[in-house]
Length: 267
Ligand SMILES: NC(=O)c1ccc[n+]([C@@H]2O[C@H](COP(=O)([O-])OP(=O)(O)OC[C@H]3O[C@@H](n4cnc5c(N)ncnc54)[C@H](OP(=O)(O)O)[C@@H]3O)[C@@H](O)[C@H]2O)c1
Image (cartoon, rainbow, N blue to C red; front, side, top):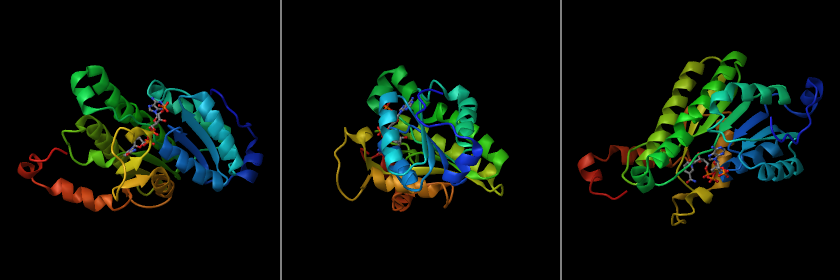
């Protein structure tokens, strides 16, 4: 493990400071949505492992979360796509640091552009690898842990873009739709075990990822709103959740529009 800023404590000390239900791994911890989720866990005096690419930023985030109440914060600097094949090993290491893992949040992702994906095979691969091909390994490794321990949760971030293929972002949408199906299948496989899996589908969220878009208006949410939804999804609700919830209805309508009408739009 790289860059741990937490202290590895014996099991007895851990159980004094951290509720056994609040040992959390956040993959893509430097995302605006992930940071919002982490701040909620910090307030609950959770133990956290923050995983992202930039060690200095992870350490700064760790210090902030400790100040907000987190009992332990460890950081692991790595490229989550490159390390996906070693997901099981990493999860085992992080579990050992905290005396167990209760919740794993898979938040990292890459939007890219459809124009780029159509023009450049490497860009198409990057979008699909970031949002689906690598993420499935982290999800499956988590599912294997959850199956054995029969408690805890996997919460992976999908997107409303995964509900219907659209000309403006079908590479990203397909990858996000795929990860939602994958996690839905994990949820089915965990049914009755006491553990759970959830794919959260945000709509438009004001984060660095969407800085290229025109923002504002009723359809935009804040990172804090979606971070709250991710935290809640770890404990309650069905395997597919929309954030904010109104997107469930919006997407049901969009999915139901017949192709001959939909194809007249530029969405
Ligand atoms: N914003 C929206 O409107 C929206 C809507 C639906 C779903 N989502 C999803 O929500 C999640 C969080 O995104 P966000 O909106 O919070 O955007 P963000 O702030 O831009 O966060 C994306 C994060 O993913 C990290 N990341 C990407 N590839 C990585 C890799 N290989 N290894 C480690 N970290 C990696 C980035 O790390 P670096 O900082 O190192 O680049 C960045 O911190 C994503 O899965 C996104 O697809 C967002």
